[in-house]
Image (cartoon, rainbow, N blue to C red; front, top):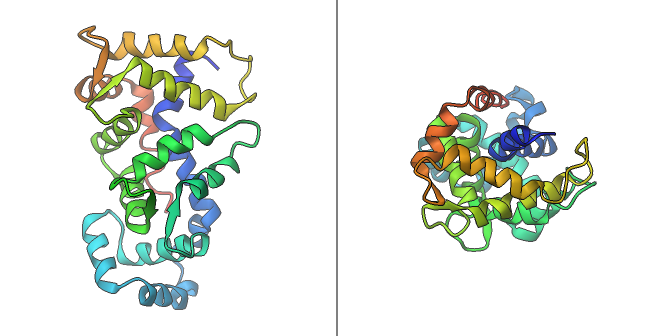
Length: 229
């Protein structure tokens, strides 16, 4: 896999992984069939109706979709929240040949918007709403926030190197040909040559979005998962 291919992974892997999570929850197969109506009513009882109505207003999901999402979320997370260790366990199932721990840590922090050490159903829905049904701008904003590890408004080479090393670790031995040890650093240099327009050593949100929007492959791929549920 070449550097350009890994750049695509860096932008899109979040969406792919959450499609897999949806499959594990049984949400994609469940659809919106009437056969789950009774279970959805139970979910409504467990999760306050007014809270569902608020989420419906804030997200891009219908009330029925939210009920289905909540049912799957509660099946996997009976406590109603996901801590970081559980989050890491979920992602480790998808990458048995690699170590997804570090990438899952970065991803968890992106979903844990109030930084309280857990991802609630509301956190899950709002992130999923952006990743699956948000505008291109919203998706790219979310991706930028993931890569901006210290949340100072800039992506540094050190931050991007940490992200790329985490992706390489997660992929394990799945790449062909096998990547060289310095491949993550080479990729970071390629990333910055493309995105650091003013060559000041950091990538801003504007530079990131502008560069991604000019990449036809990224733009096409951002639309792939809009109708998975």
